[in-house]
Picture 1: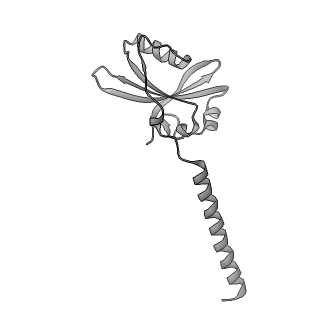
Picture 2: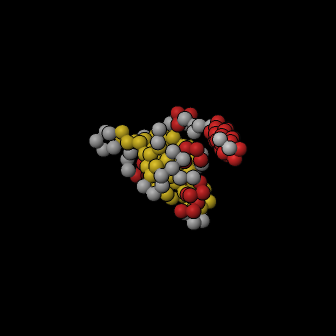
Picture 3: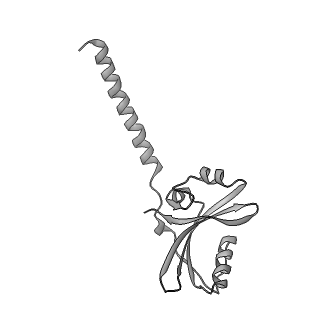
Length: 146
């Protein structure tokens, strides 16, 4: 092997080691997504006192449908949980993608909602609420990847 080929080979090996170390460090330092079990289920019934506008909306909607009690798991604006969300409009979005989709976005929130359907079947849905034009609206519905 001539000198040029040896230098090229050593250069490629060195680049592969550096790239592997970089991506390994990023994977370790970023940490995994938080476990959804870290967020407790909260029971919304007629005695529940809402802590924010989204909980107030969920309680009012459940009262109007006579669907109380409803259980929610509020993830807030947790970006790691958002990366696990798959809905009708989004598939594992980042906060930047959500803000580009909704012009004038002032905030967002992910909430799991669990309730019993008319045939006593338990339904769990993940809802992305967005705060746009001074009001909370449903931005998307779907589920979280495991």
